[in-house]
Amino acid sequence: MHKIFLTLIFLSALSWADDHTISVLDFTGEGIHEEELRLLSEQFRIELLKMDTLRVMDYEDMILILETSGYESPSCNTVSCAVIASMLLDQEWLASAHIAKIGDVFVIEARLFDSHTGRVINVATYDHELSLEGLQTRGMHNLAEILLSTRVPMEVHQRQNLLYIKTKPSGAMVRVGKDTLSGNTPMALDRVLVESRPIIILKNGFQPFIVKQLPEDISDILYIELQHLVPQIGHLSFADPAPEGLVIVSSDGDDRFLVEEGAIEFNELDAGQYHLESGDFIIHKGEFRIRHRRTTQIDPDIYRISDIEKERDGYKLKRNLMIGVLSITVGYRGYLYFESEKIYDQYGSKIEEGDSRHQKIEELDKQKPIFDGLSIAMVFPIIYYHAKYLQMERWLNQ
Image 1 (cartoon, rainbow, N blue to C red):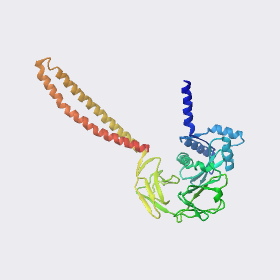
Image 2 (cartoon, rainbow, N blue to C red):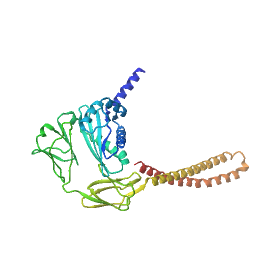
Image 3 (cartoon, helix red, strand yellow):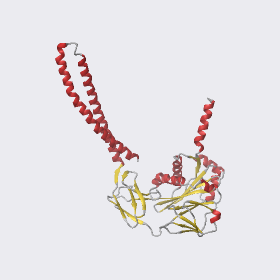
Image 4 (tube, one colour):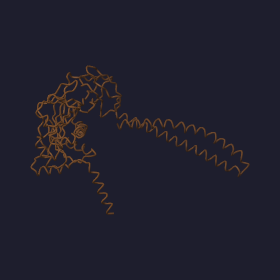
């Protein structure tokens, strides 16, 4: 028993071996209420908890440690404050974010810190154009994915003098002085070798970007958003008026645009791949590409979720009714068989009743093909209704 207990402990330790620990400070912001920032921070922690390899520090434990260390609140407005907090909390990583509401757009900048070195190991920017409720659900999910799934390689921040260059879009060339480096962004460079030399980022179709100043030593990351030489803008046209709550989403999920209800066009989208989303509708054929100076016309199949649920339940009811009818026909067909066998067994008991028994058998035999046909006929609608039911279920689970 003692050996089994030790084995369980060992296996449990193995299961946690690859997990990462992380603490999340309350978000800071501009133009957004403090309570709303707290709720967004809480939802962000929940999204991190859904990731298989992350263990999120308990919020109350975090507050206790920070208050004991003199912090008035579990949030930071400066990088230096977050660095100190990350070391105090003693988790592997610390995440912080600042949200600014500019017009109808929520602009988010999030940072991921290595708590052991105090260095910034990832920076994520995310713009959200939907409601605050949408920011709290899909927005926090997207932010968690962006911040954690595109982390800087571990060797970058484990070595002291590496600089990690990320560009949007990726795949840009890097020229240091007169030398064009092999490979494309994202890439890691030796800070000492490039610190006193001009750095130029080059990509076809985009303006060259000159790095005028390297980030402070506290950060390993240089994030650059390249600009098109000529803005690559196209337009979108709908075959039918757009329903309420339709959203245009870029392929990377960074850009989201709410379509006005009843609109038949949406102008000035950056060239690229997009798809349609909605919380109230199921959308098929909703993927499209915007091309420069062209209008892309789409005719998506849009189904209201409540209608699909009713249709699914209807197919389920019809399928079950057909199964019930099939059960009756199969049951009665079994009755005919056993009744015939019963009469056959009685042939030898009373010879004078042989004719009447033979007549009963013939009557029973005449009914058998009818119910055989009915049973077979029931199978096809059952298969059809069940297939439609499964199709509706797949749509709803997408």
